[in-house]
Image (cartoon, rainbow, N blue to C red; front, side):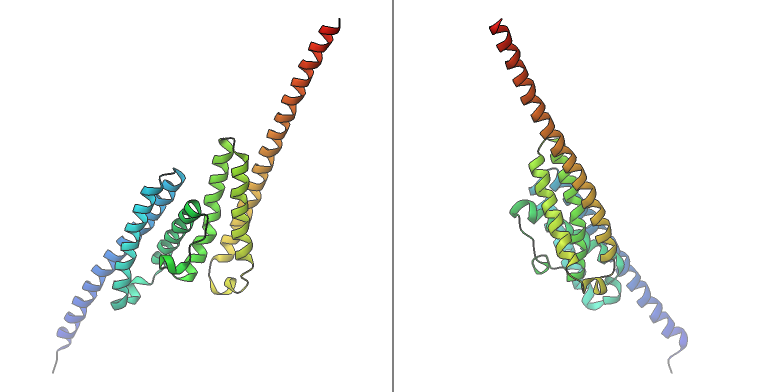
Length: 219
């Protein structure tokens, strides 16, 4: 007959082992989130090579976590991992848009569709930053292109009616995205009008100077 103390000792050992695995996995999840955020920052800084290097490292972390998931699915499938995958998806989508002007598919980066969609919604915020940077550089055309990408992402997400039921948090992200787009549109419109007015004023001043010169000649 097996004593209860022996049974509980075995359970305690198993729980401690599982706790170590969970702690290590969560540390890797936090690292994955951090690396993906850093990659996004590098993209904004136009350091695309560094961004690719970080995302390759992130891919390796995901492979390791997925291997752990086969034996301990309850440990891996957590909110912390979902957040990390969304950040990773966002970084990859953003990078591919900048490098190739195309949308990467979930299968290309090995993330679940839900995490891909939520990461995609967050890309809108990154494009607002791009648009503002372009405005500061005096490149109104680029800011308008950024706005077009933002509109495309938002429009396509809104067209996925079933996604609101299947992807928790998507409605909230889309509400935030709509406000971001509206604000960005206002910023871009204001700058385009300001530049147009400046151009008009320069032409007017040039004509005025020419007119004054003609007046002097005719005196």
